Image 1 (cartoon, rainbow over the protein chains, first blue to last red):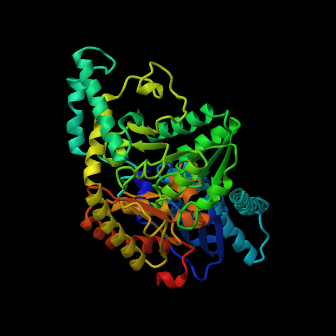
Image 2 (image 1 turned 120 degrees about the vertical axis):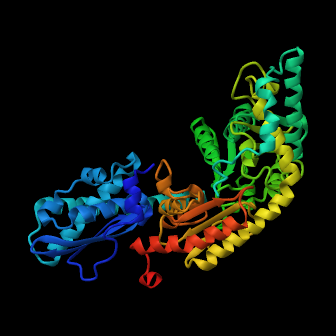
Image 3 (image 1 turned 180 degrees about the vertical axis):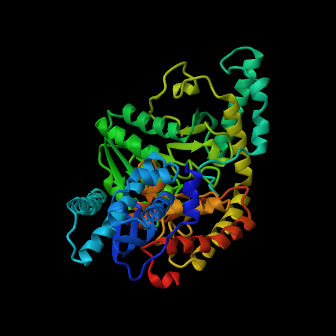
Length: 160
Length: 385
């Protein structure tokens, strides 16, 4: 099901853990859906000096979050924001189609951490990043809303 | 420890089947000797399968497996009895085949009531009683749930159905051959079973149909199996199922006792050594081979991968292992939140598991869960120091 590369990153995830004095933290996904990631960044002279993650989720979720930290580490903020989901997927030697969303989540997690960094420093946030942030928030709210509706519907059905 | 997904054929079953591939290949419908040999084997197997569930030989119809048996039972009763009514009662934790047949029947104009279960997965018999209307033609409840192991109060439901003169179907795929199933005692009119679930070959199953139950076939053809399931009989498979039924009948009690002890040791060990671990399903009204536990803060697929790396095969109720990315409807029905359902693991034990296997899993499990909890952002800090 998974490539040897995915399994390697699952077995020995790079950059796993929390940065306690992080300059930016981004959390994406939702435990309701079965995967949730937190990305931590440490920034020095506009460069991502350190990038780490914590993930609740399947093998692919853990491997993609580890891969994004590796891809982002050492890059400037602008370069890091250019990383695409395809690079994450390629870095892992491919992912099963139903797991592609994990790579999207990883890219979003990094963007959210960078957004948080800009915000904490009261720096002007690039328009593109604001858009990404709003889309990520909307997706999160949609899940919460759908979940609430789902549980309500389920209750009604059961009480019939 | 994933026998539920697929079990090996018992070597004695394989041996019994072998002559029917090369030598005794006749068609039971033929008049000649070679055909009659197959006829005899077919009827012998029918008798053995019937004996396993306390039925009469003529009440067993061979099918291609549990899913087909469920299809014949539900659609067969529904479409044959529209003159009596259009209402069906089932539970919220049925096998996916029952769920999807019910959805199909709803699209065809039938109404279906889904009766909820308690937090142990036990269906509410009183609510079945109060859901009955003068249009109700069928009640279908599983004997035991293969995922969480809970055994349902089948006899009590059977009595309700009998009193109201409503057909009672039981999906006994997960239970037959493992616990004592008796269609007379439990007042069952239709019962589905599958051969591989008790070490018979895959691709064979049976439907018990009480004499007189009004049913139409779903597969039409040459009128085999008394017209309820046409098509030349799968003689080697049927012989295998017959042999498997015979073995199960003889060994069920001892094997059930052995597995129950392993099961309880496993559950007790997992819950006591891994913090924030909980049992899914009923603690005692439970299939002897079923262990289903959930671990907070971690997700099932990553648990499965980790176990697989250590040579242990298990199964999960997590969305991430399913085609739909939705967590199991069974775990949701017993009141688990999505995130709790995601962290559930199913171990289905079988003949080849022994105490050593249980001790091995109990030895590696705490480390696996701990590692994944360290990776998980949901884990409370005090758990990972």
